[in-house]
Image (cartoon, rainbow, N blue to C red; front, side, top):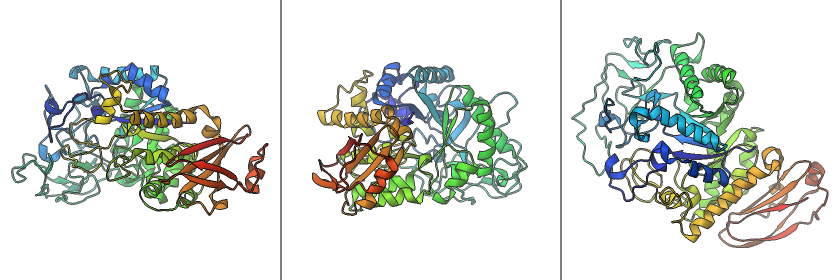
Length: 535
């Protein structure tokens, strides 16, 4: 079955509060709860054609919000009021923001996993192995599990058995121009309440006691002992964390910045997890194409983000006059790894399609979404709100006005709220255009789930035989029982095209009812994705 993923930021998905106070706190701007991801919501996502839910922001992370017996982090080491989900404060706990009953937050998480499974879908969470919050401390770890850094020798910069890297005899000096709540909120960077001595290396491989404001200054880098045997303490700690969450019913992990962690660790960890939980899926966030083979065949990953290839290519096609022949170059560069690629047009890191920074008109992305979903057998993903044209307009706080839905602030997602419609999850507050957009996404995902030829069939790129096409992309998906012709129009104007099916395609695919190789004539509306059955 084709894997179709719906990524949602739990903190925002169920938030019903409208309006937005710039850099507002949790009371002012509201927050979504795990319980908001109801049976009804999950049923509607399943009907849409979703098979996997990626729950972003589950792990307890650095925040300025206070709860009983859970003190806040110093604001200078938190980005935004809510904090980044990728500055994990406790690997063994659930973010208290997401619970109706904070003291029962783990049970609420387990109940959510059960609802997802009951709806016939799988549940993924983030695994953040490269860095932790500067204020990391686990008060939920199993008995006998020592905290990261508890047994470190901070007098040395590096030791294979240390959990962190240190800058000996140097205190941490945070950037002078910090704006933890956003640039509109004054902050006295000289009145720092957080002190770290000796300084630890910062998460983005900044081995200095003076990280820059553009560094991941709110995090510290984890030490994997150089990536070679003997096994380091960090390796074993991380394997235990993965097994803990598998035991809670988690079906897979999106592994944050996997390329910054040695491939040798992944080979060790993934093998151990799959020995006990063989169906677990591991997805790697990697942006260096030269590392793909190492992390798939050496590390054991099931899938890899196709960002620098597919995403960047189709974004350029949508936003400029780049020829669609660039798509052919994109898959050729993979040299046979196409089936391992997870494709998307939005996620928590990228700008919204409907924003003024990207396409503005969300319908421009429909041909690209069809391509992402049907080009090969690998997974396809969409980000909550994408299917109804969320544009992330305006600054909410730390994130600024950059076309992204903030992962740092308490805020709301207006278009998604219109689909949510006060927990009815029926799209009752959407416009007719919004409903038509969502219907187009549903049609694409349901096609993926219903056609075996898309799940397991072959791919034949027709562009080499159609050099006259520059704003259209045509290809075949085929198996022994069926052949589908896909014709995608990225142009802002309707077109009439003549698609050449070369003799080579007929020989490879063995199409029974052969069309004339002189071409198939068709009319395409602007931004249309057409699918024709050849047999």
